[in-house]
Length: 258
Length: 230
Image (cartoon, rainbow over all chains, first blue to last red; front, side):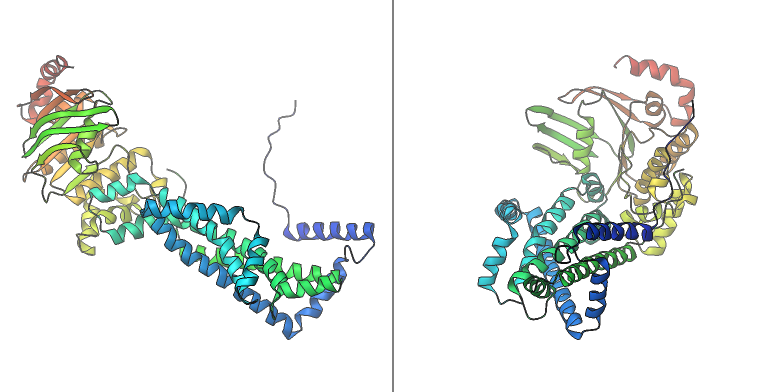
């Protein structure tokens, strides 16, 4: 019998993966043969090329980035403050907990429609982005704070280590991985819900408003083009964030267990 | 002198310490001996201040600093050995003096060359030695050691015990030492307290009045003396 062990082969080439999915897209296009349902990859790429030379395109992209970032920033700041208070004060935690459950289970569209009544169109996506990301940040940070190793805290207490050092050397390194994970989730989620809110609130400069007009004019190529732009932006921001975090938490690589 | 009077501690319905009265004299090594779960760790945790007690009083602890060798290493996994040592010294030392202290005690436990390594890169025994070095570097007035030599090589264990006898057993310090190893207890202690429980009750206090260096010869006799009470 042949002696066989399964070993991980070399990872797939990224260009191959990209080409594979473009080929699938092209294949679907050949089968459907209707531009209105599935535009061809070529026509979509041509449309993107046409869009990127327009100032209006960059203006829409910049404003959408601003809205997503503002929403995520707000959720981080408020999430951080309320998570810390919730971890210290049981009553505050019990009061805020049902709100988080409610936000998590309410359809995002209900909030968008409400927000349309409450705010002007440009602020609706910021509010929605904040509202959707906030529970993610709060839950992750609270879990992180609860999971800080009690035995390490006890050790610090015995050795009378001052609070600031305990915060810097125990709390911060314990919480950081959860916080990073929460931010990465929010970056994906933030783009999704902000663009959805833009589609419904159609502010003057917004990716979502362009998606909406593409839908009105049944311009599938443009719809696909803008969608690709959103995917690309979300991906780029995740990449950028991962790079920043990596720089912030420089740590030597292990030289193997002794 | 540390005096504990009318001490009570329960976990739910389980009375772990029930009206305990005991005193520990300074300048001595007190070995706490007893079966697992009898409440001896609870007692030292109360003394160290990491656990609250329900009722009673502890006198002689005001302003005392404590060095604690825990059962587990309790090192910060994201910090190097050097940073781990500095963590407990930072509040009270200047940086350069701290560094000298760290080097001194890491040499004692034969780990100076691992100063810039992370705990994950060290074996269990090596991490335990760092925990011992950390406790020594902090130079508390009370040294609590909860099974500190588990998994250490005989030679390094002997070096550390000799260091404790030579350097620590003076200046009004009180040393608490929990162990299950009779050899360690006979070598190091001035008093052996044999407990049972829960609730924690002192069965017998044995005074070992033979000087440490002469104990090798009287080991068999000492052993028989202690074994009678276990």
